[in-house]
Image (tube, rainbow, N blue to C red; front, side, top):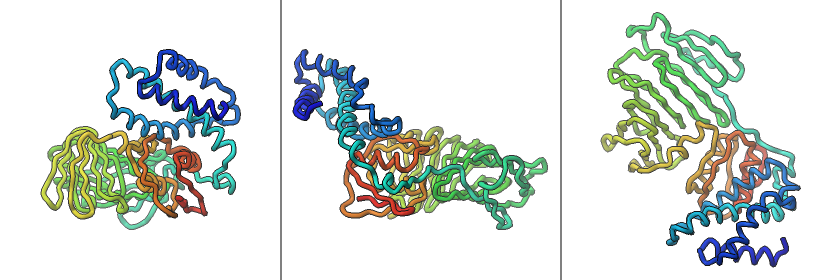
Length: 381
């Protein structure tokens, strides 16, 4: 598309978005849109990964664009046209970035022929006697016996099966499951409660729940699907708080480098004990315990964003670059350094955690941020 024609087309799209385009101009845009996805000039030089990355990136930009436009008063009869316009912008910008970015610019990652693979199922199990088992090097099957439990390993999953002699007289014995940066693991506790442990996290738990309550200790982040037992409440201890389930699925993010400990309720209810007293939250709410001991309950939280990691995704909704890079640092086992002024923009998007680091960084780079990699360090410019 010649430069002047591109400029004219941008003006036409603007008119389409603000509702001032004529019927003929609307027809031109919609006809062009139907042709766009088959334009060989756009797709010839791009591989599948590049096209996927571009689409994800441009959706981040369009989300911001659409958010600003939706604040205007848009007549009901324009809503359908508005949605089509968003798709038009996506493919138009895809063309421009394909020409100006991917064809003529290579990331430092490629120049160095260096990439970072995604994390995976990695963990260390510390037994009650202090001995450690690297689960990466152990075959699936029966692992070991611990007081009150028989441990079985499957791919990326430990199952603590209550031993046949399990009784209330069994003395508590504790194990700890620890994931490194770039690792995550699943765990079924002796009571059937399921736990998903995120990267750079640890969970200390008894091998048998024999007392009046079931207590585990968490650092980092985990998702809990609790088997409810009102006679033996399940509690999660983190820095500064205790979360007690009442028939619950919830996520607790207690990383030390985050601004707050975030407890997000998916279903059921939880009671949170803290220095100021106790707080009950409902599904779709998030309790934040901040570093200054102040707390806040956020309503209408995007639960999918808070729990996306469990489903193998990065998901951002108005996230700043530091929030994003903390997740990238944990998952790809890298340090992050900032050079120059830190971008103040926020980002929307959903990216697979199964992607190599280059794909994720490529998406962010196309959003106007530059990166270089030195060994296991990412420099944000």
